[in-house]
Length: 476
Ligand code: ATP
Ligand code: MN
Image (cartoon, rainbow, N blue to C red):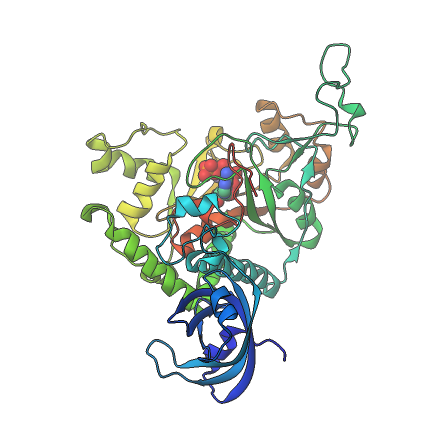
């Protein structure tokens, strides 16, 4: 018989029909009741096995074992579920020795422990929920852009450009470490390397996306990006996924609207399509908050937080206003910030979080950053000091989106590149967009794991990507 997904059985609530279900045993009570999960939803189906089931089979039904059940869906007599499966026959597909199984599903293993067994953590309710929500968000992102006529552009993972300056890069090479060819001056001769030049893993697909936007008008990328910076924080990964729309004819205000629409659309989509998972994660958060001292607990539950974001326009302020707010804040006056505040600083996470969590209590879009702390391609404002940059700051996370209107004026762009010692010659292909039919355009990068963190209410970025890559950690 063809397998029926547990989600479908639980959802349609019909009874008195034959099914086959397959999945992994979450628990086994009284030698009779099997809680079975197949990952299609957070809920388990209760399978009731007959009393005359073979003793050897009963012995091998343990938490973690995989089974196949033929039976009838009936109305459940027990509490907690409307329907259950009365087994006609049960087959153990794969046994699971409870003494060796690292996952003790019954006594809530810590997230830290689960990171050490990331190959098995999918089998927990929490990670099942997180990765279903992650999937939904990815799908919603594609749907959002597709519905608006954007072209999904696949930008390269291996790149020769190291000019973006967004962070340290991982080198890509096939040269032998112990016997690399050298130039006369002692440097490595990358002409002998696979690509005939030095190459890296990309830190961003933006520059290539800009090339696409100069013909297709609306493009976006959604791919892995890599940063070899040694930042061991709960918000940084060495390998993360980024969404980067790039739109011809958009200015910084269109760019803000696009980012706000995108974030609201995907949050709403998750609320509508993953409500059970989000309710579970909300409850998980409530339980976790109970461990914290009263004054550190967040006032809002997960669902309320998401709805608050949906129902309010993001605050829009300039960098100069943000600095002013920080300087006037009680936190600053009482010297609560670790890092100093003055016009020109690259705001630290504590500053960003003060603005969104304490001051505005909703997402904030900050524009007009000092040009010194931003990339060369951002459009220079008339004041000569700031650029048309925009960062979106989210409660509990800080920066979630970084973007800008791009400098479309060739002279201004090359001048800025020279000031920042970016090789203008090597970047001829990028500058050609400004030479041949340049147009105003804008785009941004949304860190995918940061939005997954936000929507799931998880607090460590390692817990929202299946296999995290962080300094000194690339297991699995
Ligand atoms: P941050 O200041 O948080 O280190 P950034 O300014 O270096 O970020 P950008 O270069 O603007 O980041 O990248 C665009 C987006 O990608 C960021 O807004 C963030 O959501 C995400 N992002 C950046 N670096 C990382 C990282 N190491 N791990 C996960 N997401 C990241
Ligand atoms: Mn940024």
